[in-house]
Each structure stands twice: as structure tokens, then as C-alpha cells.
Image 1 (cartoon, rainbow, N blue to C red):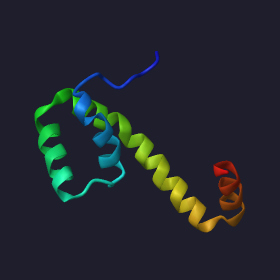
Image 2: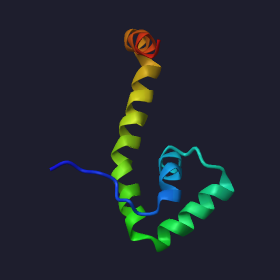
Image 3: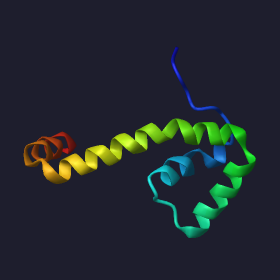
Image 4: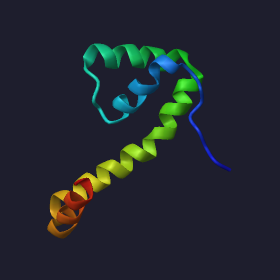
Length: 78
């Protein structure tokens, strides 16, 4: 079965991804955290993004130590 994010609260959708990777500033982070405390649909969407955050973190750690992968990764970006 294919999974999709809920239609929860459209105004928070972009912020959820930024929040998951730690890219929101303090005020934005606080506002989203308050929203997550009150919105089950957005909490579900947030939880569905956690595996993506974890994969990105593992990839970043690996690229920091593996020169060959870092070169191949750079080629993919261009």
C-alpha cells in the first residue's frame, strides 16, 4: 500500500520538513511545536518524516568519511 502525507494543515507542510532536519529558527520551531501538540494529523506526518531524517544523517556521516562516495555524490549533483 502506497503511503502519502495527510492533507492535515497545508500551511505547516513545508515547515514540517524543515523542522525534521533542524532548519527552522527558534520562533518558527516553537510555533510548529505548539501546532504539533494540538494537531494529530501533522504529528502523524512528522513521524512519517523521521526515517528520512535518519537516512539523511547516516548519509551525511558516511560522506564525511568516504572520499569515493563523496566524489560520486558530487557528480550526481551536477
